[in-house]
Image 1: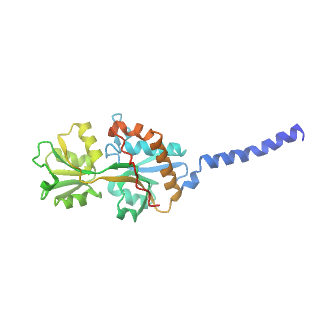
Image 2 (image 1 turned 90 degrees about the vertical axis):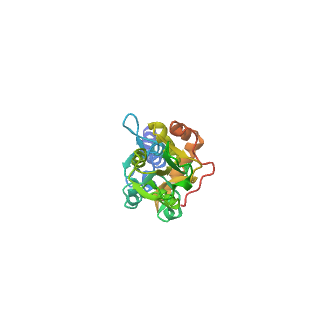
Length: 266
């Protein structure tokens, strides 16, 4: 074969080699994304330390950092969508975004509506009261007003404590109402409450022991198995190589990744 023919063969083959490379590394269309190349993630922006504005006014937090890292490793652009907690499941069903980034308890009721990722964080709920409150145990909250995040599982727990439930659009508002003496207690995620008290110097205290202990996961609309598998594989790698602890330690102070994570209901 002449040098010219050899060069011609190589030139013809180059586009094919490039096409195969792009398919293997990007694979955006194979992840069932609303917009190929973008991972749109719903997050609250008002739920520290999971999602909030940092000291520089930038969107930050545990779920923001981890989902941004997942997107980076999948070769996708991370696109946050700010939404109130009580609109998350509705927005997911309406295809407003690909993933609910806010961590949700993996309840049977929610499993009927969404596909959970593998659990990626272990926390639970706690009762928080004013620092000088006479309340020493959850049993003493019966008949008193308990603040909870609207559409969360905390309302059911507050009802089990026989309290009068008052709902809020954000946990920040609930904790501030507690500081102001407008309610008697708040039921909320233990990690979130501990961070808020420490960060803002709130005159509040968490009552021991925790009300519950639970693993939480990200939520994806049913019928997107490739996206769920990609997220599960990537978060497992992030935990295994130490990136998870590195990204979250300044907010939590310990490794909150479950040792035996509950698996996806894929």
